[in-house]
Image 1: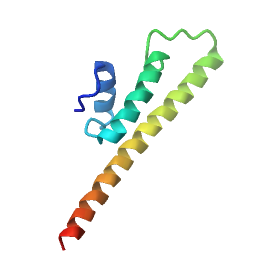
Image 2: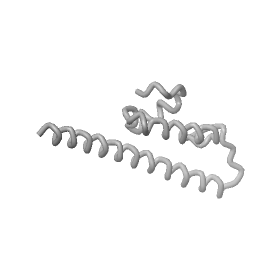
Image 3: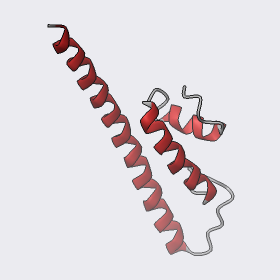
Image 4: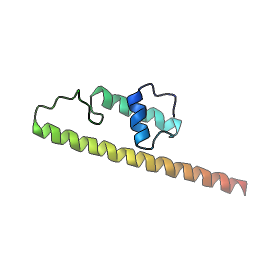
Length: 94
């Protein structure tokens, strides 16, 4: 696990999404994103978020779905980058 995360909530989110072993370059960006979402009480089922109107609830649900979709893309991209790096190392040895 990356040492740069001090927030157990953020660590748990990354582990749940298979992102506990991402590159250090990506980890800094993810920390900033999750920090901002946490500050706005938009992480998962945060009980601090007070929804006053049904349309706001729907908007927040859609935004959370987009965030989840982005975690999938980040995980897939990280795997692709690692595979390409491995291939490059293998080709360099030849």
